[in-house]
Image (cartoon, rainbow, N blue to C red; front, top):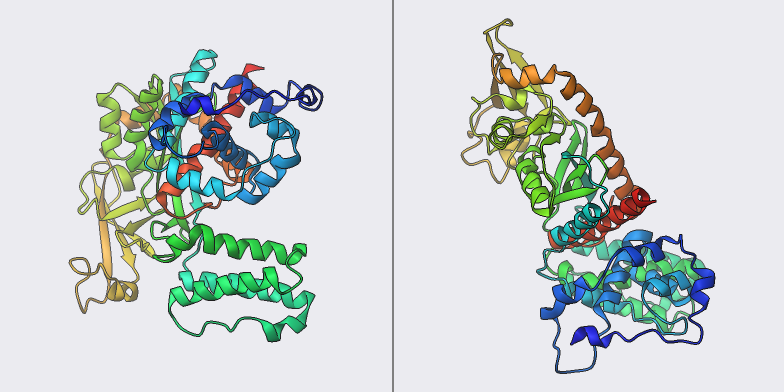
Length: 483
């Protein structure tokens, strides 16, 4: 059995832990809080139990990834710190004198052991169960919002990424010893990605073996970055920089290239559900999934609190049918029910504009029609026709030769009367004030746990990063509320 491969820590130096790792140390508290043996059950089918040499204990490998999420360190640096930081070794169930793993093992663990696992839902579910057991969850409300994460790679081609990092490495080497320039490998001059990868491998080898400056800190950092790009991401680089990442909009003049994580969180600030999507996806479309996932994790959902992105017609109907109070202000640009091509044009609530299926945002809007009770007005959104002319999705959307491309939305002033009345209630106004909490949680994920930039490429990598970061912030919150 794989769980038998973990041996009890018996060491003459184990007493050091009682001296240098106090009871209020966060890593000691997490160890005491969580029974990590669930990792064995989740990963038992990923290991060969009767052939080959013993694997590194999966709980230890999992904990290494947790440490990365907690302290926002690279694979190399997290392993190096675990060599001398006794709080790390205690958390990893190691004896003080035990050797550390090779950092490359973490990459293999992510790719081979965690692949095809629904780690995101599983880890969130574990923390919700813990919170229920600790009698922390008192409310039956969830707050919903989305946070964006920039792609690890921008919209450069894979070859441009390699060229840029190789250039920075050469510059660092020349700053230390310009005489090595004459002995450097010949730069690649073709447009073939494989040739660029081969050149980078030669450059790395030369600097490590012949330059004499490989261990200088100013050289070591760009050297490690290029090595990690080539070794860890070479498979991804051969296809694209990040084929899953998409352009999303934060406002009319602010965009990002990457992903969105749609979150549901209790009023006690425990995350109960998450959905990772590409950056252009509409926030409101994820609401029903977030509610269902929260219920599956063990939450009783009676109230949902969100911004105007979540008050579209389908969500209002869903909430009513499931006896859920939807505390989200109406926006007539979203909640009207008469617009055409709803799946092709989605409203971006931050920018106040519609975005077409190709990800292009309208550049301006104009309102027509009479004002007043019972009157119908129309908002017309204008797109940049020059972009439409070149768009690969223009067929059936843009008429060749047209001088403009617009999308119109009729606004019905008498729609959703029940929701409009609910908006005026004291309950609605009181609950709306809770929404700030999830914005603070988004900030914590980004600024304390590295969630502002993806650590790998692709949706699966983003889901793994999200699983670890959310697991950590939930555990920290449970510890805080248990004090």
